[in-house]
Amino acid sequence: MPELPEVETVRRGLGVRMEGRRMARVEQRRNDLRWPLPPDFARRLTGRTVERIDRRAKYMLFRLDGGDTLIVHLGMSGRMYMAEPGAAAPLTAHDHIRFETDEGWAITFHDARRFGMMDIWPTDRIDEHRLLKDLGPEPLSNAFNGPTLSDALAGKQTPIKAALLDQKVVAGLGNIYVSEALFFAGISPRRSAASVAGTRALRLAPAIKQVLERAIAAGGSSLRDYVQASGELGYFQHQFAVYDREGQPCPSCACKAGVRRLVQSGRSTFYCPKRQT
DNA sequence: ACGAGAACCTGTTTGC
DNA sequence: TGCAAACAGGTTCTCG
Image 1 (cartoon, rainbow, N blue to C red):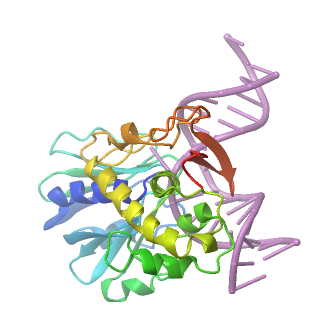
Image 2 (image 1 turned 90 degrees about the horizontal axis):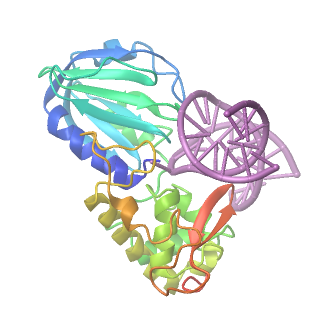
């Protein structure tokens, strides 16, 4: 659900009301997200100041005073949204955690499927956390480019679609943006990752960056669950070239067959068989 | 070591 | 209409 653009949009939205603010209250209604929350979760966070919110891949990193980081992943259906002082609705089903700042803003974590996760970890050893330690490069950083992507793909027998979903290759892509990026790069999702290493990788890396940047500019993509921190929907779903557009015309070549759907490692892939080879 | 599939959990859509 | 199956933006674990 939330891929890098959605997480980045939420991070920016939350930052406005949380950075520099103390968490005056933390209400925890259940302990079992994807994994159990750490012991004394709410107590350990209460009274801490959020100095800054960073993002790594699809994880939000709330840097707290006292040297700890609150790690948050939204999973498939997770949302984090804010309500101004006095405006927060009573907690309903699937509202699992609510933070309240010293200014009275309420930040609610809502996650029907509970694939989301949270943990608290020392900031100076954050790279050692089991969920973060094997992540590949940030796609919008200089460390990710054609040559580095080519190196990461070399020798891999798996389809390029699956390779790009592998967070060790590049961190932050999910099912939507992999399909979109492969479309813009003109690369078939069935092609082996190894065969993309080389010249095709030089086209693919910029396509990935461009798709992610455009999606962030649109506030992410709202299909079912995702909302920005403000509660607004994202808008990038209106700009999808292929994702969830099976049977519709390819926006590039307008070929008769149109966008096709196939299933790779259990997940839908959308592509134009004429443009993507 | 690698890659494919199952598992985690709930809600909504699709198909008979 | 009703019920069951399929499907959904992610990640980890197991098995061959």
